[in-house]
Amino acid sequence: MGSRADRWDTFVEHLRSAPAALPADLRRSIFEAASEGDVSTLPEDLAPFVDTVARHAYRVTDEQVATLTAGRSQDEVFETTVVAAAGAADHRLRAALRAMEDQT
Image (cartoon, rainbow, N blue to C red; front, side, top):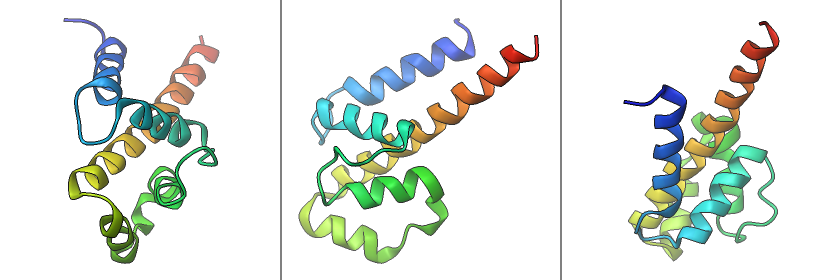
């Protein structure tokens, strides 16, 4: 079994490329936007939601979810949420790893 970082990278690649309701290129864009903190390249209906999930997920409202489900399937909303959260987590993980490297 590989290192935790290797397993994380495998998981992330699966999220970004495996068959799903959202196209893989959109999932990659959501992941990168959440990781980099720049949602300007995302579709207008997804950008505010992805930003909220990535920066302060506890602020996601029922209204935001309802707005998304009005134009997208529940599977698409779920995948958007998971991929955005993973992108934000990836950003934090890599920052922590860099900080640990700086200490050595």
